[in-house]
Image (cartoon, rainbow, N blue to C red; front, side):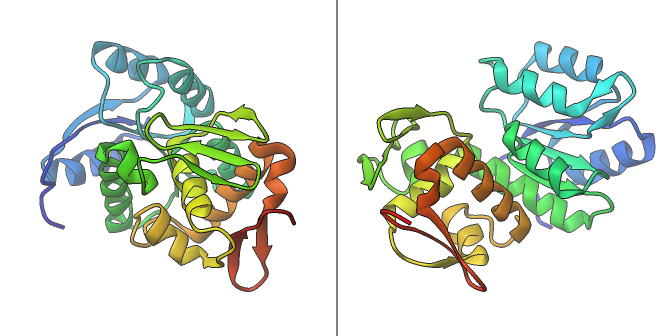
Length: 237
């Protein structure tokens, strides 16, 4: 892969030395600045010294569970918007869904293809650098059925109640609201809504949809599964 146009500072939270060095080598080959954190405590210290542009986070750490660290990052104003990609051997569906619900931007399962991981890193960095109004597709407010969204402030509501969404969830829902009633495949949602060019797995889209439905409450039923095709947003199911 070509060197990154805009080198980023990346913290790799990984206790396996060989894996950490592999990630460091490949990321540095693209021009990124990489800091290694073999423990959760090291990660907290590094982030306290300076908020990185992205975090790669393993879940099984010697001094704690990475999911707790992810929650802490999302709860702290300094790191609430920092892209976090979970990189873990824990690839069962409940763990993937939990990671996304805790605020992960993406989940990569070990073992992984290096080029795929690098593509996901590039996607997360690119989306984080995109102005909010461009990421959502419009600066003007969006509305459909019970849903209201303000791309400029990244605020969303369902039936008048505010809904807290991650950046990825907001972009995905904004795409549906801007294109109501249309059916989109998972691949189209990856490429058109999230700009991932296929870097995000289709099952990750499924997990995001499940999380959106839960967060939207009764309005979540408006996100309808079109079996064998994908998803669409309707005014009432």
